[in-house]
Amino acid sequence: MHARFLRGAVRSAAVAAAVTGTLTWAPTANAQPFEPTPLASTAPAETPVPDAGSIEITAKDTAGDVLPGAAFLLLDSAGQEAGRGNTDAQGKLTFPDLAPGVYRLKETASGSPLHEVVADQDVIITPGATTRLTITDSFKAARVLLQAKDDKSGKLLPGATVNIGTGTSTLLTLTTGAKGTASGELPVSSQTTQFWVKQVKAPAGYDLYKPSKTFTAGPGAPVTVTVTNTKTATNPTPDPSDKPTHKPTGAPSTHADKPGSETGGAKPSAPGAGTPDAKPTSTAVAIPDGDSTSATPAGSLAHTGAGATPWIAAGAGILVVAGAVTLVAVRRRTTTESEPHDNSETN
Image (tube, rainbow, N blue to C red; front, top):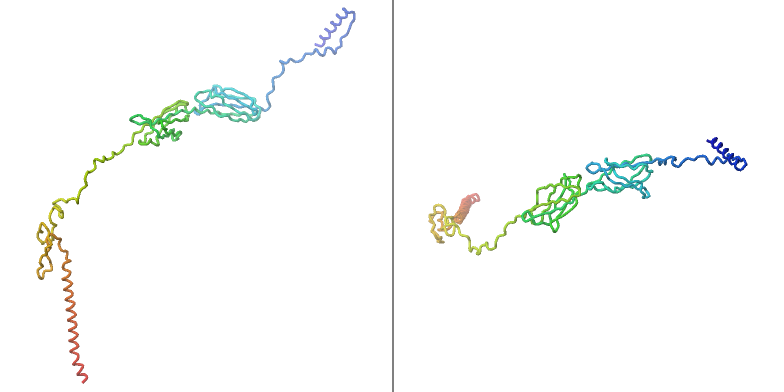
């Protein structure tokens, strides 16, 4: 190429000399600036960041299904955007060529009207490594409206408390207010979840609704739950007019055929005393001599033996006196008989 350039230069000098009549030799140094330089388009591509890392995201819901279309934003430690994108049909998204450091990951959309987005989180990128994350989006809560009603009139009742849950877990407790209703959010774990409701406190004046009801609810969908109560049965209060208007006077009468009654005649006497008079009297009956048994006065109870006690005591006294007299007499007689014998011995 240099030879061609020199020949061109010589030819040009010759032409110039022919025109001007002077032959001039161009220095060879003038040929140096004409060497071609590399074009910008042929410059090598930008070299990758040394020791770069990456983030690989997999988006799912609580039921384990992947979530395509979930949107994420990645910010570096200075708060500048380092990348953004959406998950593919398999629920995956990758942020490559990230310098090592701490990044902030934000989920801006779940890609589904049934799911919530997760809270922001920090991600640490290590040199030459891929950080894999599984993002789990929960289902939106179901909106529950509780009503307590009178089973006959349908009137809404305040003060009813129920527990709502699934399986063995209680997830929500609601108590109806002054209008007989209550509302709350019920967490769901799938697109159709079955729940149970059980009343734990009945409204005032009503019996507890003991059966356990079931219902289904979906993410973000409203559902109404109704429990019915029956009024508590009460015993009728006695009417004051039913009470007796007068009180009985005197002791209650005794049936005529019962012994000892006021209208049935005299009480029976002791055996062998004869038939008593209709009207008892206090007239005494004579006691025959030598008979220790007395007749029972008419209309009185039979003797129990207490009347013979004075006679027994008198007899015992007589016997004691008689014994004492006999003893004295025997002593006197003994003394009298011994006195002459003593005199003869003295003489």
